[in-house]
Amino acid sequence: MDDGKPVWAPHPADGFQLGTIVDIGADSLTIEPLKKGKAFVSSLSQVYPAEDDVNKHVEDNCSLMYLNEATLLNNVRVRYSKEKIYTFVANILIAVNPYYDIPKLYSPETIQKYRGRSLGTLPPHVYAIADKAYRDMRVLKMSQSIIVSGESGAGKTENTKFVLRYLTSSYGTGQDIDERIVEANPLLEAFGNAKTVRNNNSSRFGKFVEIHFNEKNTVVGGFVSHYLLEKSRICRQGPEERNYHIFYRLCAGASEEIREKYHLSSPDTFRYLNRGCTRYFASKDSDKQILQNRKSSEHVKAGPLKDPLLDDQGDFNRMSDAMKKIGLDDSEKLDLFRVVAGVLHLGNVDFEETGSTSGKEGHT
Ligand SMILES: Nc1ncnc2c1ncn2[C@@H]1O[C@H](COP(=O)(O)OP(=O)(O)OP(=O)(O)O)[C@@H](O)[C@H]1O
Image: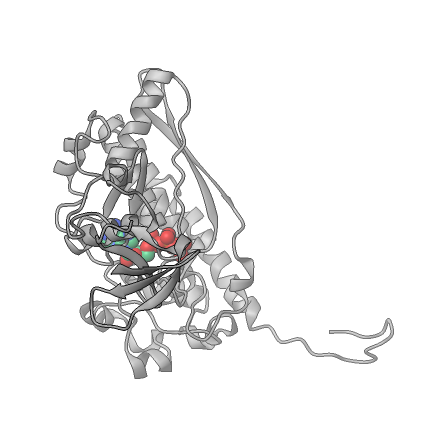
């Protein structure tokens, strides 16, 4: 490293910073930052060689001249600044959450482009991974798995949905089974996702999604196993967090008839909701469509929560349609809403102690 070329050295806030080596100790180096700043000493094991041109990026981290923690991070960062959120590390894909829609990144034309193309022939994309898994399944005649992992809010749920959409639209039958597989998601998210401080649409359960193919390698079905649902959220949430979306969607979007039948009111009237955030997700326009008596005083005061992908009232209607598409009839739908309303009312039940609290005669 001591050839006068810049190196990556630790930085307290940015992870790494560029500098040059000005002194070499037994197991430490003295680094002078390229940007303004005092020279500092860093352990030898934490200093990494930098690429000749740190502003150049590559599609696959394996193509870097020096592959280390710092060059990998810098490559991903330079790509992100150019709206390239995906980067390969051989057949692993790194995705950085952009938190906004990148035009045409997931369009039907892009799906078409990736169909049947080998990994590495097109820019890194989650579609490339989905297609590789599909082609390996065909060639090896064995089930394939895609593991999606990352911290909360990293984009796992969204990327999993892109994989499902890719497989069903590229290798589906074009019949309603494709739609049913994709439409299962709004339903799962209504009951298993909630607003947390880190993610407005955080999945509070793990899922193992299976896509089944027939001998002609066409999608014929799917199966979702779920595990470890955060059950405690039903009874209590943090002050900035919410319960599962379904409760707010039912309060905001249900017809007057359903509201009356199940004695629904605004979220702040329910104990299972009013210890957390009781605002709905809505846009400026959709907020106007929600009747005043459905809104909590917190919502009226502070206005709706904003998220481009969430809208409680509209999502209720989308979820209702999704239920129909996956095969639930109207009476099954009503049964489901009845159970959800029942949970809210259960939270409002008061228990009173009567008689002795220690002996058998104690009643509640
Ligand atoms: N590729 C993307 N393009 C645009 N926005 C995205 C993308 N990926 C994620 N997002 C945004 O980031 C939010 C969080 O992503 P997501 O819910 O997929 O995270 P997650 O990793 O599944 O989190 P959790 O573990 O909390 O469920 C999404 O609701 C969406 O607004």
